[in-house]
Length: 97
Image 1 (cartoon, rainbow, N blue to C red):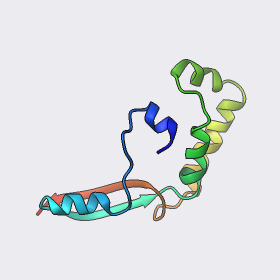
Image 2 (image 1 turned 180 degrees about the vertical axis):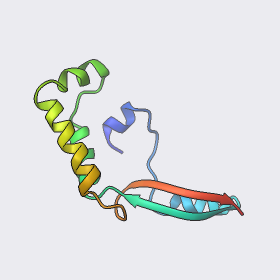
Image 3 (image 1 turned 120 degrees about the vertical axis):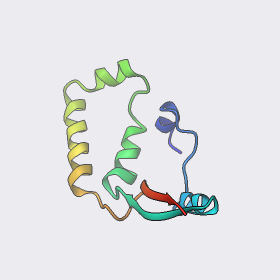
């Protein structure tokens, strides 16, 4: 887990397949899952975010000038050049069995 994730209230990360196994064990069927974001979200952007300031005032200051450009560059890289089949960003659809 990266430091910025802790600052935003994340308490743990999951391994691939761990959530599916948990829900399946509780009588919930996996319909479809996606793991996305490689390479521009995971690991590139996540490592860069770890270097950014921790509070909102510092974050607003970093958006001036080069920070704003960097944010847009990262956004478009993630939006248009990241995989929708490989990575550590999880989305899942489940239903009661």
